[in-house]
Each structure stands twice: as C-alpha cells, then as structure tokens.
Image (cartoon, rainbow, N blue to C red):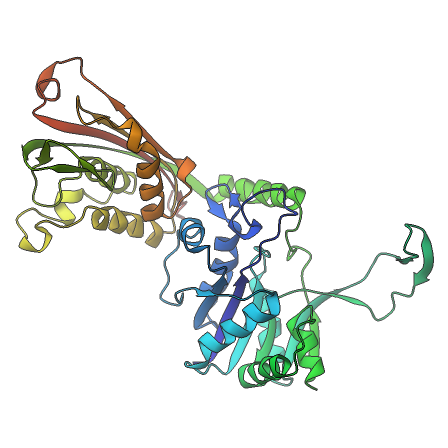
Amino acid sequence: MRTAALIVAAGRGTRAGSETPKQYARLGATSVLQEAVRAFTSHTAVDRVQVVIHADDAVPYEQSLSLSSDKLARPVAGGASRQASVRLGLEALAAEAPERVLIHDAARPFVPAAVIDRVLAALDTHPGAVPALTVADTLKRDSGSRTIAATVPRDGLWRAQTPQGFRFPDILSAHRNALRAARDDFTDDAAIAEWAGLSVALVEGAAQNIKLTTAEDVAEARHRIETTMTVSFEPRTGTGFDVHRFTAGSSVWLCGVEIPHSHALEGHSDADVGLHALTDALLGAIGDGDIGQHFPPSDPKWKGAASHLFLADAARRVRERGGRITNVDVTLLCETPRVSPHRPAMQARIAQILRIAPDRVGIKATTTEGLGFTGRREGIAAMASALVLLPFSLGD
C-alpha cells in the first residue's frame, strides 16, 4: 500500500453549539465527516481511509456517512486525546504497512485535492509535510487581563492546517516514542515529528480548508454545501406501495422493528411491508426497477430474508450514482397493531440502514375506518416516498 489517510473524528468539542460532536453535524443532505472522508476516498493517490471515532459514536458515525468506497476501512476507537487517537489509528494501519500517511482533522470538510497533492509531493523529499498559510493579521500577546502586553512579529509565522503528511514508519515510531516518554502535550502531529528530529516541509494550504469550530462555522459550511448542491444536483422523487396479508404467527416486522402481534405477515421474506414500500420508493427515484426485479420471490436465496438487506441495497445503488438520500416517509395502513409506541424505534432503524439522521425519516400510520382488506384486519399496506439528490449529467 502506497498511501493511507487517517481521519481523526474522536473529539467531543462543544464549541459548535450542539450536543452532537461537530464532525457529525449535518450539512444539508451530507455531513461534516462525510465531506472530509469523501475528499480522500475520491483522491486517486489515496489507497486506504481509516477513521478514528469515539468509542460511543458507532451510531452517529454510521448515520453521518452515506457514501460507499472500497477504500474505507471500518472505524477504530480513539483515545482520551487527539494525540492518543492518532496513535491508535496509526497502529490500526500498521498491519497494512503504507509507505505514507495523511493525518487529517474530520472538522476540515473542504480540503481541496490540490492541497493533498502538494503534501504528497513534498514527501518525496522530506519525512513530513504540513499545509499552512502565512499569518496576515497583526498579532497581539495578551497580558493575562485582556490588555495588550506586546505586538508579536508575524514574519515567518504560518497557520498550520491538515492533512499533515509523513512517511508512515517515521511518524508511527515518533508517536510510540512520545507514549514511552509520557509526552501527551503535542498539539499536532508536526510537533511530534519535530520533537523526534524529523524535517517537516511547509507547503501552501488553502483558505477554504478551514477547521469548523463554532456554530457560525458550521452554519457557513451548511450554506456553502447547500448552495453547491443547488447548482450541481437535481432532486428525484420516488414512491412505493406494498401489501402483505396476515397469517398464523406471533409477531410482525414493520419498518425494521419486530412487534408482538396475534398474527404474522405472509411473504417470501420477512414480509416487512414498510421496508418493501420504501425500497421501491428509492429504486423509483433513481429509475432502477423494483424490489421484485432485484430480489425475485422465485429465488430461494431470499426466503425468510430480513428486509433491511433490500433497503440497504437500494441505498447502495443511490450512493453508487453519486446520489444522496435527503429524506424518506412511510405511511402504514392497518387497524392493528398500534404503530405509535414503536415509531421512534422505526425511525432509528431506518436511519441506521440508510445512514441518514432520524429526523429525515417520517413514520405515520392510519386506519381505513373499517373499510377494505385492512379494515377487515386481513393484512397491512404501506405507502412510501423518498427524495434523492442526484448529480446532473452533461446530457441533461
């Protein structure tokens, strides 16, 4: 392996004004983390992308990523500090022995490919390289009481950014040595490299490669993403409808949740009428047939299959077209069982399968006032809709 990218997303920063860590903040139909990851999975010189997350963040991680890439490894848990998280990420990559590694902050979602190129080029002649911008503002040193103690000369000062690139064995050794020396006070990986005696080159960074820190930063990033998406993406809607009759049993599967009931639903798979309708809605939005075409009931492979497999496949097809699932909505038509007690669990399960936020999943239920087969309690029907953003093609 030539080049790996290590994206650090284990922080718990709250300055962005949300209970959710800023790396998972939504930017329209995408997220801060997804844009940071996409910059590296889409770069032709990067072979592997490893994300380091907090041990408690498996669910928000899955919900914040709706892209699919063979380059993306399973996330690993970080440590109590950024330095510890980077070291654990490097250790996770050690078995693959990359020649070079790019260490990037997840809170920098807008790193240009040209910056990555410059860092990698510098590694041909230096053990390390850091993108940076010269300091343009006049710097003042605080006296400690919010008054100016001195003006600091800005000549030769740079503002460091990420990704910071290194020859992999060098930076892994430096982190291990820092651990043995009980040094945990380094503010970035270039500082560890300097401490280890490595020469680190400065290359030109980019003004757009900002680190999101405050709520205002996140709001500005959201505006930027939504403006870009308006120009380069088009909305596609799809609808789905499905019906399953009741049969003998003791529970039903609805929208990915098993609910105790006096009957089961009859079907070749688990007969989850909600997920079936939603699968068709996503397939319809991208013009890719229907659930029966991709998972024919005549195929014994799908007998008794869990319907989340069908929905996950439809979401994969959206991602492979460069699309993003904006929101979905499901309406269940039945007299029984009661849906409302299970609505939050249904929302959470669908959000997990589609890798979107739960508030982008609508779940509703209604009766048919005793009319028709649902009114006679012979079965359950479901309607679903989905909004997907797909890139414009040149032929449009």
